[in-house]
Length: 342
Image (cartoon, rainbow, N blue to C red; front, side, top):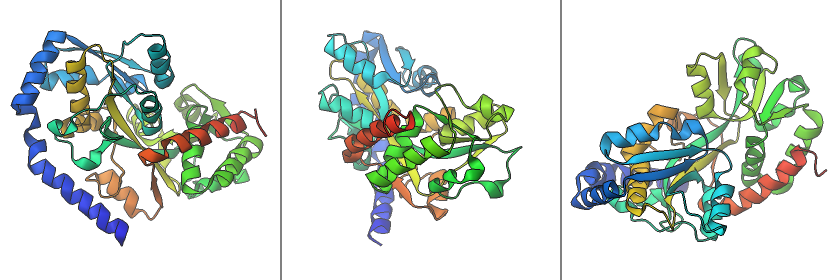
């Protein structure tokens, strides 16, 4: 009952902001002044996790705030890259978008700046890491499959079901994403159980682990299933004409993402404006339309989020304070899955 009450309270607070400051934030004198300062800087550099996650931003941002060139980089290893560049005294990136564990890693090294997110209409529950990041969206880990070659009755209902011998030799997995799924499952279960799950996958499932996109494997039928996909990515594969769908096994693992301004951003005004827009209601809606992202947090005003919570699965949402622990378990899982540690 307490969780339900908290969810309703959060939803009410979000609606209150939507009817007030959030609705008019982009016309405030403060934001207009920031826009003028950003135009004088002329450009802003945005880093995100994948090319598809960033390529829509320049055009969408210019629709509300013209006159600023947005340069983007999309790749998985941007956290490592940002830390390495900071150590070398280079400061190229202005705005950083990633999951909470990566944001936490940069915060530990004092690489992210505090930002006034209220001026962009963000309610308190969307401000994380003591003001150093603004919530943007969540992802849910999914089990993808070729819907032309798989009977829906054969799909797993729980993550542990994927260890059933009927899936052996038929599954692919992202070498990048699967360890993070295991790390998040460790938050839902406990670490020993999660590491045993990784060990069983490595030794019994005959997984095809790859860093290449998995849709071609599923489309061709070379592999019928793919473990630990991001559901928004599978939605995109389907829109592109691939016969691929997904289910979200129990427990549903939900990972929030956020956006932050770098402490030594070379274009500080443009960085604040772009980060604020990305985290705003308008920015989140632009993201949803571009890359099918959703908000799966309890109480969120999102049809897909409500659908997931109504499905009866246990929904586990990673909290900011759990970021370091998740990272540690993901590293251990990666070693097990690649059979570097038994």
